[in-house]
Amino acid sequence: MQDKPIAKDEILKELEDIHKLDYDYADGRILGSMCTEAHPFAKEVYCKFLDTNLGDPGLFKGTKFIENEVIKSIGELLSLDNAYGNIVTGGTEANIMAIRAARNHARKYKGITDGEIIIPESAHFSFKKAADMLNLKIVEAKLDENYKIDVDALKNVISDKTIAIVAIAGTTELGLIDPIKEISEIAFENNIYFHVDAAFGGFSIPFLKKLGYDLPVFDFSLPGVCSITVDPHKMGLAPIPAGGIIFRKEEYLDVMAVDSPYLTVKTQSTIVGTRLGASTVATYAIMKYFGKQGYCRIADELMNNTKYLYDGLNEIGYDVVCEPELNIVAFNHPDLDTNDFAQKLEEKDWKVSVAKCPIAIRIVLMNHIKKSHLKELLEDLKEIY
Ligand code: 0PR
Image (cartoon, rainbow, N blue to C red; front, side):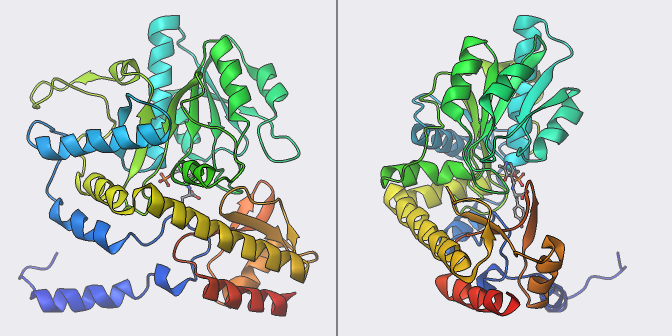
């Protein structure tokens, strides 16, 4: 740090220049992100609540009330009347909380001290962090030919040490929904904690179903489901950092509680102590602002764009990995190696990401990618072909 203060204008000028290194969602070039530009109204609300700290809720009773309301609303969206949980920093923290709840619950009620979690090969890497931090062993459940959990393979890896089973509603790479109903039954019968990672799909599947899209049930209406991750900062169009963890029962929060003697509350169950209230309030505001109708409109629009890209790719002759269930399309060039293909797209200034399972270019059709961008992309893809 320099000795003397610097004038605001000078600092702002410097920051503006540095900010130019960042890609802008509005350019429509970011094709592999699950985040998007937050709605201007959400940003406006965010700024008003920047000083609030949900880590000491007795001091911020209004903001804590809003967190409870958001959890209630998301819970209702997921067919749960009395939801418990928190708005956290993202899907990673939400998944770690779910696994921590499962581990502590199994330790307390089943005496399991060297637990295992069963996750699909398609699971987000946040579960690897969870297992590492919580000293758990990962057991992978194989996928079937459609890149979804193979239920029989899953049954075979359940053991006395299994403290949680994880399934995904909207996989990171392909946007697919695992056979959650079948897995819920298995988890329920075996009295095993079942967590659904709907970080991506949680804010679109309920709306698409409402519109009549034929998508499987994935929520708390299935008795085996104990918790669901659903991220406002992905398909919810809320500003970062806004992940959501919803628990069916309060006891899952209770088993994680530690004493917090000098706070305005006696215990704390979240991982993070001092917690920003702004993104939670912005989530509340944007959910009210859109309502179910608004989210239905957005989800439908994004699926239309997805179909447009899917059809366009097939028309040119690209190998599309699977028919999209949600707004992600993964594909390969019939001849080129995927990384070389990605390089060609990078040269044309498209920011793509490469999926690993299977290896393919993956495009997440978020709100910032408009039809006009897709037209441009398809033109470039025609050229590369
Ligand atoms: N669960 C699923 C199913 C996810 O896809 C992700 C993130 C997470 C959990 C973790 O969420 P947080 O990143 O909020 O902790 N999926 C994307 C990914 O890792 C996130 C992402 C977002 C990646 C923007 C790139 C990007 O530009 O691929």
